[in-house]
Length: 101
Image (cartoon, rainbow, N blue to C red):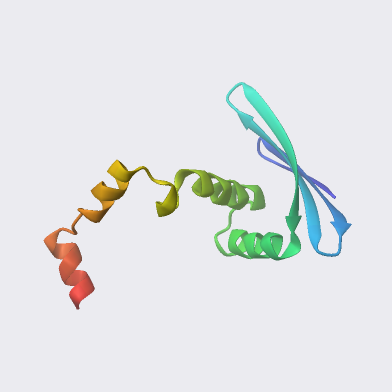
């Protein structure tokens, strides 16, 4: 199956009962990066469901998830200085009140 939406093209094919191969080409200003991934069907189904609910494209949902995984670092990987900063953070009064109720 091959689909084209906006500046992105995607090709979906079955590679095994548990995986779906998705090839996504993304045009970023002057660059085009094409990547083929074998994604477990369960993840594809979750992404398709979310995309349908939010009226978004499947590749936009997958890109958001991928981007999030690289921008949100697990606490265990933070240097001590950043970890101490997080430990010393406090909510402002309205946020704390909202949690207290």
